[in-house]
Length: 133
Length: 137
Image 1: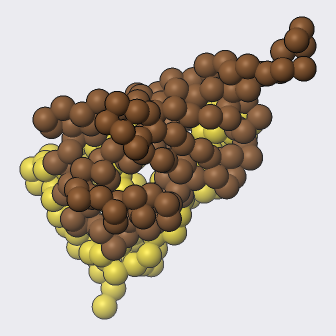
Image 2: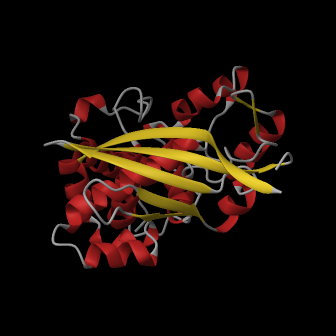
C-alpha cells in the first residue's frame, strides 16, 4: 500500500531522531540537516542507510545527495557553484528547490539545501505519492 | 630532469569513536558500499574493527577536505583507498580511484595521513602532495 506524505514524514522523522539523537519536535519539514539538526557526513550515510531499511527502497548513488560535483572545475569556481554547476545540480536533484540557494550559490551554503522536506519530497517522488500533508 | 614533492592540500577531520562504533554495528552489512576491499580486509584482521572504522572514516573525510571538496556522496567514499599506519607512530596513505582519480591526479599524487586518537575521538590529518618536475636539475 502506498504511503501518504504524512506517513513518509513520520518515517523520516523517526530515522532522523534515531540517527542524530534529536527530539521529535526539532524535526520539521524546514529543518536543515546540518544547521538545525547538527548532521555530519557520517550521519548523512547513516540516514541514507536507515531510509533504505525503513522504506524498503534502494537509494541509488547520488540520487538523494549530489556526488562528484564539487571536484569538477567546470562546476565550482572561487568557492561558488557556477551556472553550469547549478544546472547540473538541478538536473541531478529534481526534488530540490534551488530558488534561495541560487541567489548566492556559495559552496559553503550547499548543505542548506539538505532539509527534512527535501528528503520527504524525494521519497514521495520515489514512491509516487500524490497526497499532501 | 628530477622531480620533487610539493604540499598542495591539507584536510583535517574528527570522528567520534562511539558514533563510528554505532554506525559500524548498525550498518555492518552495508560497509562494502563505502569501503574498498583492502579496507574491509584491514578491518577483518583487526581486533577492534569498530575503532578502525572510525579511523578509516576520518581519513577519508580528511582527504575529501584536502581536495577542497565537501560532500561527494556515498560513491565518493569508495574512491579514496586508505592504508592505515602499520606502527602506532607511523602515517597512513591514501590514493584516489575511479573518476575522482581522473579529475585530480594531475595535481595531487600522494596522501600522507597522520592520526591522533583521544579517549573519545580520532583526528585524521591528510596532507596531499604533488610531484613537480624540476627543470633545473
